[in-house]
Structures are given as structure tokens and as C-alpha cells.
Image 1 (cartoon, rainbow, N blue to C red):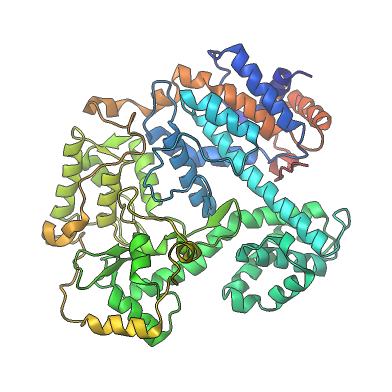
Image 2: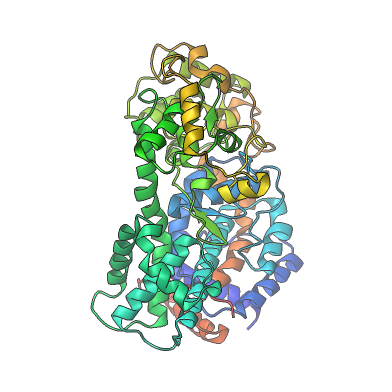
Length: 586
């Protein structure tokens, strides 16, 4: 069967399963040569596949992505630039799983506007990378393409999980074709997650290493009890009754664990760290901690995290040095710095989930445009409570003036995806939103990277911390005001931290020409005819994401069977539509 026929079968199969998720077939404005070349490359990938992810993932991703896609600036084809696509995908994975996917996550840049590639070389097969970066990126990426790219990334990350699971089976001398008793299955799940948390390559370990790690897991990861409970809960969801576990059962449980573990890390580790910082916050709501108090917490109370040296914190963009005599630490910047992430995989890190992103998502959903007036932004934000600020808050005059300054910089409108608005959000929500340093002024280093580059430990000794504490008397400096309070003067509120330099996620398409440009309805953008024509990649990638189990021949038989559902006019939900899968290359 030809690649084109394969694609159409996959398209109809997902239409049967997904109801109205897909748009009507588009008019083809893409050259036949380009389309056939893409299909040929995709068929090569399909020839190596055994299994693909369930179609339910597409629907969930589409729901999450739709408001952001509507609100981002678009090119003349109705698509997102590479920078906007990277920004969208990064936010999606952080929101869904707490994943900082390597290649997508920022690295010293506020927005990845200078990069000409999506950065997925380390995850997707080379043929798909070429397809994305060289053949499709020139016209921008439409909504469906971004949804499918996201689903592909998740699929290949799960494939990596399955590869590591095979390594654990091999290390324990188990046959992947064998079934395991429950006790053995629990042990396997636990040692897998222990190695995952530690970021260890199982292939480099011995069986004795696994045993030692398992016996000392509570010492190495204090929150292990909560992880063990999550393993038990997920296992019982898949296997409610006692029984034996096949390799596919273990793989399905681990796939679900990989998607939920980031949320657990955020709820336990990140919230605990945040509470420790808020307990020593300088002023209620200021989002800052005096560095003196930061070190004092470690010296007097043994809080093991609070010992990083000032040069290290400065490089990572964690400090407010408006008053050099009494440096302050920015709570959200510290919480989200790369050094606080878990390096669990070669493909992604687990980091604290950005609650400021929820506020931006609310604005995107309500405003449905790349920019808005200060009044509309204030009204939309007033409707929603954040983690630390109630709804219907009082907006200080200094805050409103600063937002109006941003609008004056952009023809009376405020771009939602720019540095100046992110800076304003930091002062409006200092506990939730990170201060956005200018690109290139900070780095995303781990403590190991710091040691490698400088030859110095990233932490101070107890004597060095005591010396710093004594050098900064507690009563000499002025308290930093919380900038969201009603009466604070603008200069006292912002100091030198307000930098009137803009950076846009898409500097080409994000520039505001006139206020009327912001009034174009979002639905008109979504229904742009040329944008719909780019469904060719949606159809292409559906072959990758919709063909179900086994070899290509077996997959086609299932697809043809699913076609009968489409012709029957019924969108029945089957048990297979609920199944979750993994994609393995052999």
C-alpha cells in the first residue's frame, strides 16, 4: 500500500475515534514533490515501529495548546515561527508534566528567538528532524502540526522509558517475555523509579548497585515514601486485582508514572522549598529574602539547601542587588533555577511547575490575542486568584503606571509574550513570577557545571556564611516594599530592577502596527485558509501517531477495520481508544 493511502487510512481512523477533533479536508497548496518526499520519509520511520501512542493524547494536548496558539502572533501563512513554537511546546510540557525538555527549555535566553531549529534533535529520529526543521519550518507551524509534534515528543520520551525498562530486566536477569509475580513487579517498579530519580543510566549499574540503591533510597531521596505511594496507586489503577504482570503491564504503569511524577515533585519538594523561603520572606508579599537571612536559616536551622555562594546565585539570575550593601534573593527565580531541577533523563529534567504560567494561560484564554490594552489586562487578571494573590485585588498606582508605560512602548497595546510584560508580571506577582533578566546575562547551570567551569564548589562553608551574616547587620538596610501595595512610590518599588528593554518571543510578527490589528477575532486566525492547507503535515504525522499495534501490515488491518466505523457513522468509544501506548524503535 502506498504512503499516501496509508496516511488517508490513518486520518480516517483517528476521525472515527476523535469525533470532531479534526477539521475538514483542506485545499492542497503544497507541491506534490514536497508532500511525497515527506511521506517517503515517514514510511521509513513507520517501518521501524512496533507501537504508537494512543490517540487520546492528541485530544488532551490540543485542548491544552489551543488558547496559547490563538494568542501568539502569527506569520502571513497563519503559522507560528520556530521561536513561538519552541516557546509553546516548552510551556506545554512544563504544565503537563513538569518536564524541561532538553533542546526546548531556555538556556540563558528569555525567548529562543535567535535559534533557527526546533531543537528536538536529541529526541526525534533524524528523518523527522529534517522534515520539521528544513521542509516545514519556512511557512511556520500550524496548530495541528504543533499538536502532533508535542505528541511525537511525548511518544519518544516514553519509548526511552521502555528502553530503560528493558535494561532493568536485563540487569535482573529477567526475560521480557516472562510474567512477574506481584512482589517481583513492585520491586522492579521501585528500583526503576529510584534509578530514574537519581538520573542513573541503568546500563552502567550492577545488580549490587541496584540493591544498595534500594536499601538506602530514604537517605538519598527523603520524599521517597510519597513516590512509593504514587507507584502503588498507579499500579492498582492498572491492576486492581492481584495477579501477574507482563512486560507491557509494567511499561504502561511506568508511562503513567512518568507523566505524574513531575506533579508529585512539584507538590512535595517544590512546595516545601517555597514554604521555607516564604517563612523568611523580607516583607509579606515582596517575593524576596535577604541573603543574610537565607544563610542564617542554614547556619541556625540546618536548612541544607540554603548555602549557595553569592557568585553562583548571581550567575543564575537569582539576586536582587538594588541595594549592594544588603543583597536579596528572588524567591521565584531561586525556586525555578536549573540547579533545583532533578536531572532524571538525558531527554528532560524535572523542574518546579511555573504557577506564573497559569496566569498567562488565563490571559490567553480570556483575551485571545497577542496583545491587549492595560485596562483589559487588569480586568482579566482581577477575575482570577493566583497561588498567593486573591481575586479582585487592589492594583497600586505604580503598577498601573508601569503597565501603561509598556503599552506606550507598543502603540498603546501590551504584547503578552514579551520581556516587558513578564517584568511587569514579576512586580505584580512577586511570589509567583520570575524576574526576566535580559537574554545572555544569566545561565542555566547546574552545580556540576559550575564546578566544571570555575573549579569552585557552588556552596559556602559554615564559617564563610557566618562571616557574611556578620558583615550585614540586620537593621542597616531599608526594607524592600511589596510593589503591589497601594501607596508605594514607583522608585522605591522598582529601583534599578526595572529595565525598559523589550524582547519579544517573535520579534518579526509580534511587533504591533496599529491597535486595530489586535481586534482580529481569534477564530478567523484559526480558520485561515492557508493555515488549514498546512494540514498536510497533520495528515502525515497521523500515520505516525494513529497506526496501532504490531507491524505495519497488522497496523493497516486495524486501520481498515476502524474505517468501517467511520463509514457506519458512529463514533463509538472502544476499549482500545482508552489504551495508552509506547513507541519503540528496534
